[in-house]
Length: 308
Image (cartoon, rainbow, N blue to C red; front, side, top):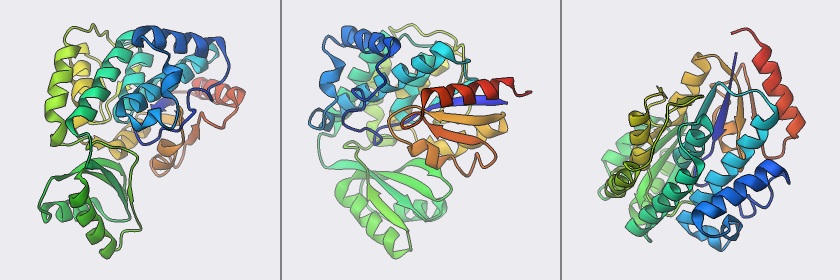
């Protein structure tokens, strides 16, 4: 059977997520490498005030994911798959061996700046739990104004993106339709929709000068839910994922169908662990944060010994 390392997206951030990483040489090396590439200490970005910035959030998520994965892989067997939700695709690409970490730091800094500059205020994302996808799509079609489907996270959870007042109208109607929960996310930009097509195109221009390699670990796309091996297609996936719908529900199903029975969620948080429980009903899902390192390594070693 197989192991998947899953990297969370924006909204999972927590103040102190870098300071709270294990005090280990691999982690310290990762923090130093990121700081050198950025030209400032990444630890300066890891505070409640700094994390009001989209750029800081995305950089911290990148560094937390790569540092934790490197710590696991220092003593554990390599996973079979890596995948990330939105910005989580970048640490996944680094860990797969396709994208150099220093290049990822610089690209993610630019990504955050472009997204934040495009919509500095008045836009965001909202989660809707308890309504079928088809009903949410109907509500969006019936609503005037900029609001779009952004994420298909699970069978009964989707995320919309757009202007705050338009999302509030959809949210009101979703509650009236019986939605169990409607919650604005800690995301200040309208990700994964057409509103970010122009910033994505500018990021793609920067990507053109960055070398990518064939992944050594299987990389699953958060938008297509399929493996990507060709560097050119991976470059496109990373550059444009900010303006494409995320389908984590399909990704979890694909991973399970391909034999994944252990998913370890890189920090921070455990959002992806909760989202994957239905798809991985016969497997093990665990978050790095809050777990013992020796427990995680033992699970990876056990999974590596299972017959394929």
